[in-house]
Image (cartoon, rainbow, N blue to C red):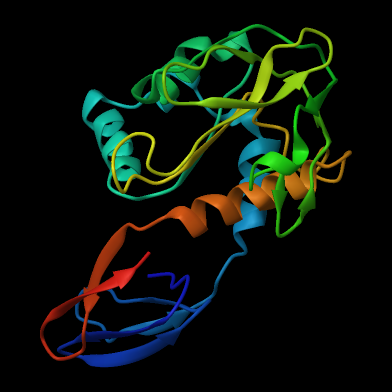
Amino acid sequence: LLLLDGEVEMTNSFGQLSLRKGEAGAAGPGQAPRRTAVLPAVNVIQWCLYYPGVLDVDELRLTPEEQQALYDFVVNGGGAILAVDHSGFEAANENLIDPFLLDTTGFGGVSADGTIADPAAHPVTNGPFGLVQAFRTRAAGWFDNLGPYAASLGTLNSSGNTAVAAIDPGVLAAGSGGAVFLSDTQIGDDTEFNSLDNRALILNAFAFVNATSTAERTVDDGKGGRRSDPD
């Protein structure tokens, strides 16, 4: 269990453990809960993006049940950031964003910069981590269909095609969360994270989906019951 916010008690018949924001715990069969080390999420994200060759693209495809679960999570108030890539990964790309009725295609070049049409107009481009006016991609694709829900936030300079898009809270359904769509999985890796306004874009996106999320999880209340806890 990794606690993003609040406090929680991990309890079983062998003992209990109190966790606070940013702490993690685990418990195996026949063992009392114990505190574990926390690996910073940015390192996990960077590792996954830095070593794309170790993954079989076909293995990344979601099952229909997983696609529905992803969509339902956002509809029920959760937030999501979905990053796809160029047309070499088109089957996996479409599989990920199909539930939200977007389509992706193309290859924007080894390095391609983009521009935010109206930087001040949206929390993803005008958020707590700064104003986003320009961004840099590497071997990106683009969205050739945004469907009925998503809105374009930024386009590639070379083609004018959308590379950054968002679905705002309440658009999919009453009480639904927000989602951010990026047409490049490397836009936030250790090479491009500090290029142009990429850092602000990525961090604002995380802040946006977190702030708009109303999804809840249940946790042990330490008294043999369960209680709702904000995600």
